[in-house]
Picture (cartoon, one colour):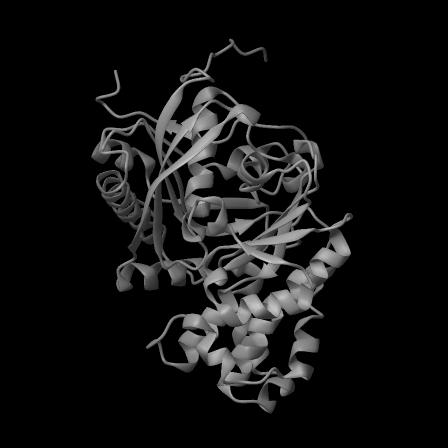
Length: 397
């Protein structure tokens, strides 16, 4: 088939005000970042304008966790959650617009949505697929602003794993002619983007290193009967000791030896994996605090071993972002395990918590300009693709 040429909706050199929306694997809420983006590709400039976070209501979070954890639910449950999240995403976007320097003037909303299933590769029992929910048509209707959403399927249609997608932003925002950087995000899952100095986009390497906060959060929730859902400032881990036999066994998971491109999620490291490891003899050697300390060490150690195994060049500095960057115990473990200088992403003018929302704002901007924004060396796609689907409001005429 030979398609008719479609030109970009937004000129490539234009300046647009964008709100990026991100709901991560930790499922704690919606991050909304306002940015002003001028130009495209290597010429793009990104001005951070504000950030807010809308926590999920407890009932919604619990329902999402059940669905994402693999619990069998009626199709109607997923359909209803899709619409409910559309309402919440619209609410987060409007809150960000009113609080940020955008002063309510928004040209575009870019919504990643909430992942409830991601299988990047075919297995013997599961066909590769991905599903992010949070109905974009509702966001467009409620806000009166065009929405780009559903970014991952385009990359997967081209043979990629649909993740990681943030490396395009990392390259545009953090590339250097003099310094080789590992940009390490720690959300529910931990992922790295390697930017060798002087690199072209084709030189970028990116992949999920393994669990980030996911197992730690699950253990804290379990051991406190839901009174706590994460280890604030690493206080629990700091009161425990690392169970070395358990850490050694955890490090034997085959994911850590799988070569990139590769992605991970609750399918590998969700609550079911925590329940499995708690049954191991090695886990009975310590207290709940020791288990949490060990899972914190697991995140640090798998980051370090991933660098040694799969990053081919020198790393001059490690730039840390995501929720894990706020855990000083984890940060110190990463510094010790990698033996690298560690910088926080905040030093570059964007709060660490806002990074992924800002990244999807850039990806949405590129979609409307007709510019591919996946990184095939990171996802495994056979060629670059223009990602996302566009939902236009009635008022956009």
